[in-house]
Amino acid sequence: MLWAGTFLLIKRALPWCDPIAFVTLRFALASVVAVVVWHASIRRRTDRHLWKHGAVLGITYAIGFFLQTWGLERTTIARSALFTGTFVVFVPIVQRWIWRRHPTRREWWGAVLGMLGIALLARPEAGSLNAGDWATLGGALVWSYYMGYMSYAGIETLGSVGTGALVVIQCGVTATLGGALHLLAYGLHSADEHFLGKFAIVWNGDVVIALFYTSVLATVVTTYIQTRVQPGISAARVALIFALEPVFATILGIVAQDERLRPMEMLGASMIVTAAMLPALTAGGVRR
Image (cartoon, rainbow, N blue to C red; front, top):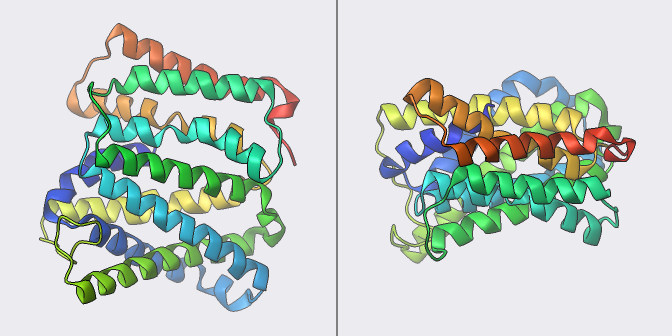
């Protein structure tokens, strides 16, 4: 539900802020908040496994958000939501190839059904894929690895104290990589239209609201929840639950923008809800 509001808010902020600058500021602010909340966790945790997990998750986190935000500037909200949702299809494949985990038949069917539902709900504009679409697809592929790593890398052994520290590390790594990219752009004299861009930002209400919402609610809070409860749960099942994001986004549109669902969009929302429930109908949907 918290993630659902990010597409609209970020889209409104991007005309005033370079995409990677926005991500860098978002995670820099999130890092400050996370350190304030979990500073004791950082002092108590020096386990090398913690820093290994944090580095891997932080790097994949950063790449995924850089690609998605850069892509959102160049495509529509509907297409961004659709292509971000393709991680529902990627996760069982990544889970099978990298971690040698065999998704259940219902997880495979759920992935297909969820993808079809997202397509019907998002109703992207017809046409060939543009650069923004491809970047968003790349981000979805990276996040499918992130979800698999979160489920199967043994993070649950770190306990509740390690969870707070992991949030701090993930946010810090993402902000640091963003800063490094901008230093590189400065050194290369990169133009705004290139991927690296310049650290350009015009402060206004759209930017401030988007930064506060995405950094505190849609980063610190959501990353803590995911890091705390996902490890040990099938990545395919988690991905299907996350496929509910466009459903919540549609509900927000109805409440905030007085939008109405067409019959095909209603069908798509129903398919996504069904897909998310499928793995729960079998004990094979959860592996611990």
